[in-house]
Amino acid sequence: MNWGLIGASTIASEHMIGAIRANSGHDVVSVQSSSPTRGKEYAAKHGITASTTSLSDILNGSDVDAVYISTTNEKHLPQAMTAIAAGKHVLCEKPLAMTVADAATMVRAAQDAGIVLATNHHLRNAGSHLAIRNLITTGRLGEVLSIRIFHAVMLPEHLRGWRIDNPLAGGGVIPDIVVHDADTVRFYLGEDPADIVAQELSGAMGVDVEDSVMSVWTTPSGVTVQTHESFTHPFAGSGIEVHGTKGSVIARNVMTQQPVGDILLRTASGEESIEYSLHNLYERSVSKFATAVAGDRQPAATGVDGLKSLAVAEAVKKAAVTGQRTTVDYGGY
Image 1 (cartoon, rainbow, N blue to C red):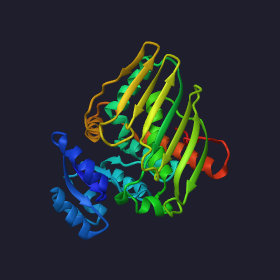
Image 2 (cartoon, rainbow, N blue to C red):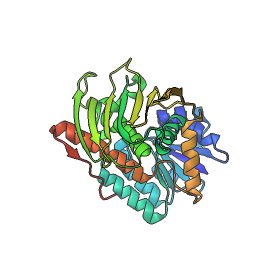
Image 3 (tube, one colour):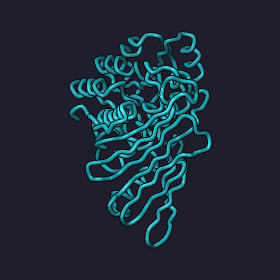
Image 4 (cartoon, helix red, strand yellow):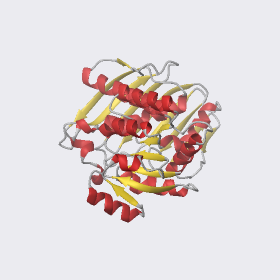
């Protein structure tokens, strides 16, 4: 497939352009940026043939089969809807949209048009998380009792900007990181969190959006999930723990874009280091997307997956603001 980039973004530069080209027969042939200067410089740097400020220029080109959307969050809905109407398959960054209702609009439009809409949830493509999920689904942990996620990091300087000062663009740690953790929990358990309590903080970076949040979720089967997400913790590290009746998994440094981290399985027999595939997360995401476009199975994370992780994030925000237990509303999905 030939790809068009909607957004001359850092994530496309650092991860997605290489991942697309690493898949045989795939290339990035155009990029759209709101700045003509940035677009031209970006295209030249990455060997992309065409740059434009016009979305229609990319979508009307017969040489583009799919688009990757990595603009600020408030632009996802109109850009995706325009791409779907033009018959282009869509791989969209998370959060899929600003609201669950908007995400549902995108999902329905893609279904009606026979278009593949996928969410670029990279963590479920990691060898580490695939290995942990396998431990759960094969019964090595027994019945899952609880999950703890620590995803409190120091947001790198070059990724700040709108993430810390623009709620209208979808800034804040909840839409940026909670959606990752929600998707990972759903990927592990195969069920959706049901209700949530939460507390948020803001101001550590001098911003108006929340920059730290802690929450507790429950699932229909009774699993308790505890999460901590932040933009302000330089030395906390990241990780996830899954505790069951027969064993526990303790994973460190796995909530990341790289194939790194350690996984320890602890059971009555002792402790065991779990090996896992070190493949590139984003290359797998593109590969799964391409397979779905070819009509075989689903992308790694569907549009509905993106909608549901967003629904959890919405519930975390509501619970934090109101101080009340909040039921997750999945918009009928």
